[in-house]
Image 1 (cartoon, rainbow, N blue to C red):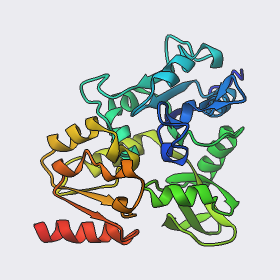
Image 2: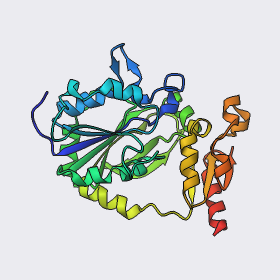
Image 3: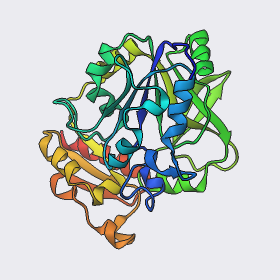
Length: 296
């Protein structure tokens, strides 16, 4: 391993895009899907981070994480078995403030004590749905030189059909409009043809700025719009979490789940939500927002 100590910590969200491969991620998460027999998808990111001297890495898991924890062990394979730093895995309810999160911001909020305890200046955040040998040091140097608040990695390519299908089931992917290296607009679940600037969901921020932003967002809501994707039909834990919040929750689905596979006709969430909107594509979110506004 490289001995250089990059001034950054890594945070991995291993459950992102589980819906891309439901046949493989039914009992495990995206990050632990096997690759070439002995490896897992997450190995690419862990190796890239370790080879760039990033030895303080957090993995914030949500569901179906036992196979991932068995694979990672103590992190020795990546030289991450250390007294200070190394590999930290955060499952839901492992600590008082941790819960089953529904998005990356909630995941980050649940590990705020961890973020505050670190001394590194930067945070590198990423999903675990890509197999890539990534130079995080080069990206970090570019971020520092640019003076940007946030730096995002992207690739120029056509949007894969699998990603578009996953987007129609509730997952989010992002394309970028760039101007002289700056992001001017972000498009959610675009279906435009031809090469696009497709986000790799790898981001760099100043650690203190990230902590400030999490506090700024806060977690007191007048209402919640939730598209839980496949967890709608499988997660009793998520239903319990919705029942525990005081704010009204609107369950949203881009497609009409009643016209899809039989297992999608069952929702564990409907009984604890204020209402349900489905079948109107991305406009479903707008309709849900209007419903919450009219509730006030």
